[in-house]
Image (cartoon, rainbow, N blue to C red; front, side, top):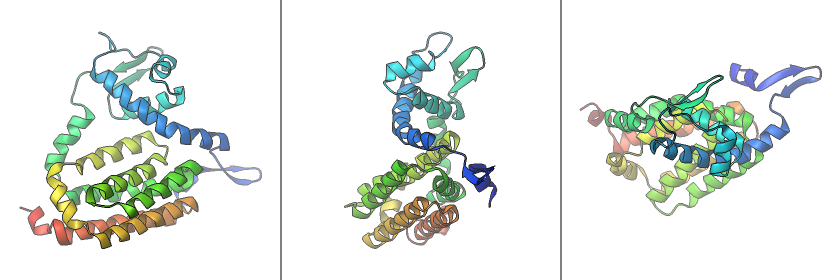
Length: 261
């Protein structure tokens, strides 16, 4: 058993049992979507300087009531904002907006100017196979249903823009199933670098109907491995999928010679 698997399990008198209870799993599926609502709303509020001269956020209960989500969803969103450096939690004092500095999205935009698609895929290869492993250990039944739905959406996408949207949705679903706010935030930052408009021609050049069918089949294999709780297979399937995309980009859209100019 790997160290990641060990984290997800614990010894009991009757053998190895999952550390996550059934109730926690059920709650987690509902939280994933509502926490995204809370995250976007909190980002808007922070950007509007709503929180006064001291930057202190209201208690979680008040935020949950205002946004219309559960306290668990607010807590999850605050965890992501803390990982991004947007807020600071001080025990006994409360939660505060961090001092003014470039936002995570601004830093990502600057970083995108210094990278190319192959750089981004190398970063994704370092992150996403582990996310697939964790997803196999932690995904809820709802997560798994949504993974298969996203995989199917990538199969039936009618054009490159539709496929890109479905592809991103699938990989975001895998990340969300890790239940790790820091990993999710890092993944989002990496994915945003690939949204740069200057890459569109290369992405569309690399896309064709045959590749779409291949990539969508890979999505389904990843989803199936996660559904089977086969962490090693999920990790390997994600790595193989991203490696194939990387090679396709190098061979067709972004020849290495051009990347070194």
